[in-house]
Image (cartoon, rainbow, N blue to C red; front, side, top):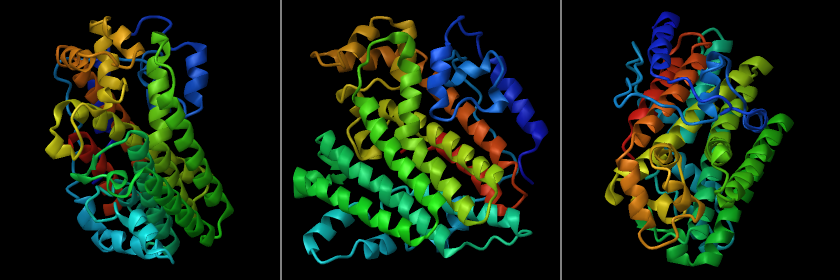
Length: 397
C-alpha cells in the first residue's frame, strides 16, 4: 500500500513543529521572483512559514526525525534490473565512431561503476506513468528507455567538463578522464557525449521532448556560471545556492521525468507531476551530496573530502553554519582562498547544526516528492519512486 495521506500529514506536522518562525523579510519579493525561475514553492509547503524553507536557512532540532516511508518494501534497482543492467554497454555502443581514441575518452566513465540514479528514476517514472495510464500495465517504451540513457549521458558529460574546470585528479576512485587523457581531449570527449546524446533525442522525433532537453543544457550552463559567481550578499546566498542546485543537478532529473511522461502519453498535468517529483528528489540528492562532502572519506566518495571548500564553494552546511559563526561570511566571500580557511570552515560546520539542518531540508524536499508520487495509481513502480526518497536521504556515497 502506498504511503497514506494521513501518514504524510502526520510527517508534515512533525517536521513543521521543528521549524522556528523565520525572521521577517527572509523571503523578499526579489527572492520569490528568483525562486520562480527554478520552479517556485510547491503547494504542500506554501504557507507563510514553510514557503521560506526553499529560500532561506531553517532551524531544526539537533536530531530531526528521519523520513519514514511506510509499506514500501520495494528495491528499486531489482525492480528495473532488466532495464538498466546493460545501460553502460548500450551507451558505449551509442558512442561508437571513427576515431578510436575519441571513443575511448568519451566512454571512460561509462564503466558501470556510477550510481546511475538518473536513468533509474527515469525508468521508474516511465513504468509508473505507463501503469497509471494503462490500467496497471507497466510496460516501457523503447523511446522512454532511450531518454533514460540520454539522461546518464548528459550527466556524465557534465562530470567530464567539471573535472576539467576543477582540474580534478580522481573520479570514482580512479584517475579522472582529464588526468588520463589531458584537458583538451577531455573537453572534446565531453562535447562528443553531448553530441551523441543530442542525436539520440532527435531520433525520438518529439518536438516537446527535444525542447525540454535543450532547456536542460541551458540550465546546466547557467548553473555552472552561477557557481562561478560572486559570494557576496549574505541575504541572497541561499536563494542563489538553491537556484544553482536546481540548474546543475535537479533540472536534468526533473526534465527527464517529464520527458518519459510525455513519451508515455501523459497530459500536461501528469507531465508536470513527473517534473515536480524529479525536481524535489534532485534538490534533495544534491543537498545530501553536499552534506557527505563533510562527513565521508575519500575512499567512500571516490573524490577528496571537503572538495567543495577546496574549490571555494559554500554549500548548504556552510551557509547554515554561518548563522552560528558569522566569521564564516568573510571566508565565503574570499572563497576560502587563504591558508587555513578550509580547516576553519570545516571546524565551524562541525561545531554547528549545519549538517543537521541540511539533512532536514533534504527531508522536506523528499516529503514533497512523496506527495507528487502519491498522485499516481498504486503500483510497484510508484512505490519504488517513494522508496527512492529514503535511499536518497540515507545514502553514504
